[in-house]
Image 1 (tube, rainbow, N blue to C red):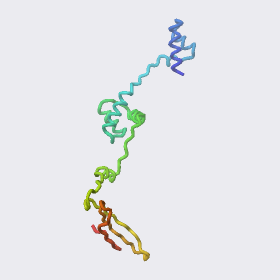
Image 2: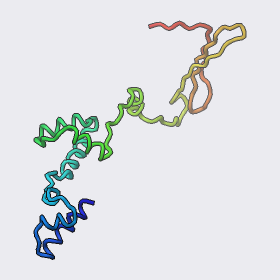
Image 3: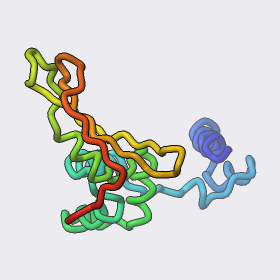
Image 4: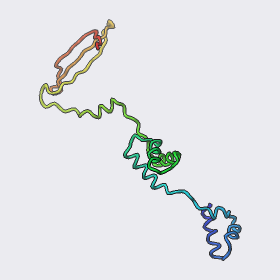
Length: 160
């Protein structure tokens, strides 16, 4: 493990009063690795900013987040944005179909408290033994749970 080797190479010159070159040679550790200083920046601030953008702009994917960060002056590669975006477990939410959105905007059904307050209608389809199709429109009062009107026909034409 490279960190264990570095720790050993640090301790030997301090304890035994020998050079770093000799200490690294004695334990078979490369001097370039000993002198290596990481230039990686802290990703915590960037990850926090990406999460903030994604919380305020739920329709942004990693590409639009990268554009936003670039405009703010972060100067970061799109591949790094993608890596952090995936690491945070953020996903672009799928669009809900328009019919579901309309259903969400509708109010919940209110229970009827008196007759003729709320009605429900439905089409019922059936077929006779002769092969003729039968369609029935039923209109029911939801308070009494009884059918107020039936309209039966064998052929209904759709008119615009």
